[in-house]
Structure formats: structure tokens, C-alpha cells
Image (cartoon, rainbow, N blue to C red; front, side, top):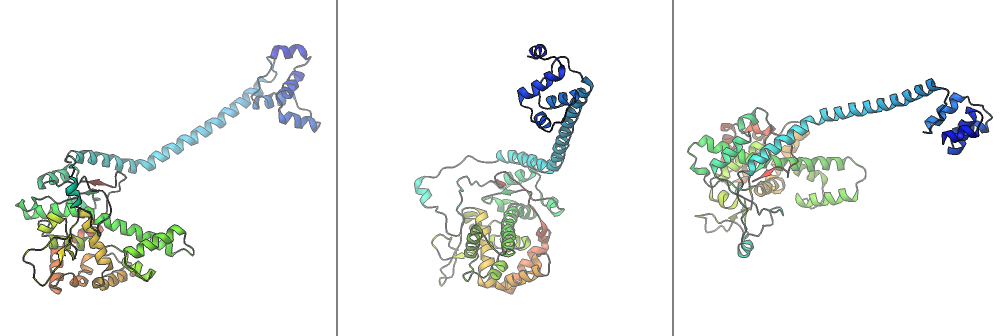
Length: 400
């Protein structure tokens, strides 16, 4: 095409103008309308910018080379910025990637300890309906590991209480049932440590859920207008925490954690460190009473009493029901008031500061408080009040 143009036009300039007209170069048209005469070099540069091939006898190779260098330089600058941004992202994401790798590692190890899924007959399923107090979740794959297997699992995953006391984050491993042979462990210290390792992640996980809700509540309270979704969320929380008059200050007081040391001490006392019949048969860690047909009847019960011990399909449901009990029952209103006062004073919630307000949990009253304090002190459970969970995105932790 460029050879044909050379034959039609006398000068190189005319060839350039014809190409500009042929391809409709807007810049050259505007210059023509303003009667401004462009030099050959300017015409060449404008054609190059519009990606139009020049005739063979172009006159300003130096200017063209300069323009091409400029275009390449701009492209290189953009590529450099993109590369720097990518490196920065990789550096920022490194801790997260490391956590994910660790999660994959201990998830792989734990899979070796899982037993095959056991399917129940239709008749058995009818007998194991989930009670009202439990969350509506699927627990078909629940297993009960023996004490030795559970201990080996924790060792393989690098989960030990010494590390947690030193600031190591708790591995998100949620056992659905206690080892049935826990009481056969001869070493009392070993038995108690294993029990704490099993229950600790369950307690922290429930506390984290409460803290997430509490954070959302404060965000809603700080707004002048709430969305439909936020109002629905509030309505559900009022129901969950049994605030019938929809008093926000009351909801704020009830929606809070139970110190880890208190929950561990009460679970240890009420379940006999995980060896009681109620804990092994019904995952009942906290000895809560019920008058429904789904509970477990105590042996040698007072004939005048008709209560049973509330049972659950999994341990996590027992922890959740316990938190709801302390956060809603009128017997623990003083506990909640003092806890709220500690919050107002910006103090950390420590178990030993609140045990005296749980005397109504058992009929022995003040003696029960002394028992809890003794368990907390002798087993250094206050060390776990600051314990945190290792963040995870994999199936919300590892459930066994």
C-alpha cells in the first residue's frame, strides 16, 4: 500500500496527509481546521501514536525512535509498579499462608485418627432426636476416640498445655465425645491435662462467637439508623438471650463471655474430670437439670425430685447450653452485673473475680464457690483466661 501512495503523490508530506485522512486521524484533522501547519516530523509522530505504518522513505527516524523509546519506558514503569505491588501482597499474605499450611498439615494428621462413618437404622434415628437446647447441626460423623489415641493425636498436632500457657494459640480441634476410657488413666495429672485439652477449644470457640455478636451489637448501637437485616438480627438475639422487653442495655449485659477458667473448673467438677456417667453417656459437662423426657436420670435420686440431667449429642452443644444458662437465668443476675461492671472499668475478665457470684449453681452454695476456687488455683486454670484460638478457614476447625 505504501508503494502505491508513493506513486500517487509528489511529496512525502502529501503521503503522510493522505494516510491521516484515510485512517481518520482526529488530531491532524483538528490541526487542519485551525489552519496550523504541522511539520513532517509531527505528522509522523501522530501517525505512529495511532499505530499507522509510515511510508518507506520516512524522514525523521531519530524522532520516531525517541517516541518509541518513550512508549516503551511508560510500559516498563507500569510493569515495575505491578511487580512491586505483587511482591508487597506476597509479603503481607505470608503469615496467613503459613497458618493455612499448618492447618492443612494437622488436618491431614487428624484424618488418620477418624473412624468410618456409622449409619444408624431408622429405628435408632427416631430414638436420637436433637433436643430443643441443641443447635440444629449435622452430627452423623461423631466419633469417640480412646484416651491413648486422643493423646497421640494432640501430640502429633503439636497441641500441648505448656505451649498454650506460654502464649501459643489453641488448635481448633473439636472432639464430639469424651474418651470412654478416660478414667482408666492411672496418672491423675495426665488425665486432667487431657480433659482440659479436649474442653478448652470448645469453650474458646463459644466465647469467640459471643464476642463476634457483641462486636456487632455495639456497631448497631452506635448507628442512628439500622437496616432491616440488623433489626432482624437484634430480634433473634433478644430471643436467644431471653430479653422479652427488648431492652438493649439488658441484652448488652447478657451478651458476654464466661471466663475460660470458670468454665473449665465447672466442667471438671460437674463431670468428674470427664469420667461421670452423664458426661460419657450424654455429653453433659455441666450437670444442668431438665424436666423433659430426654434427660438422664441420676441414680439414688431423691424420690421427691423429678429432674434429670440434660443430655446432648455432642460436647459443643453442652458448652453452648451452659453459656446460655449463665447468661439468661435469673439465679446468675449478680454474676452478669459484676461482669458488666468489670467491662465498664476496662478490666480483663478473670475467673477468680467472678466465682463468688455462682453460689446458686449448686445447693451447697458457698462451699461450691470454694470448690471452684480450689480447682482453678490448684490447676492454674487462670492461665487460660487469655488463651486465643488459632485462626482457621478450614471447615471451622477440625471436628472429631
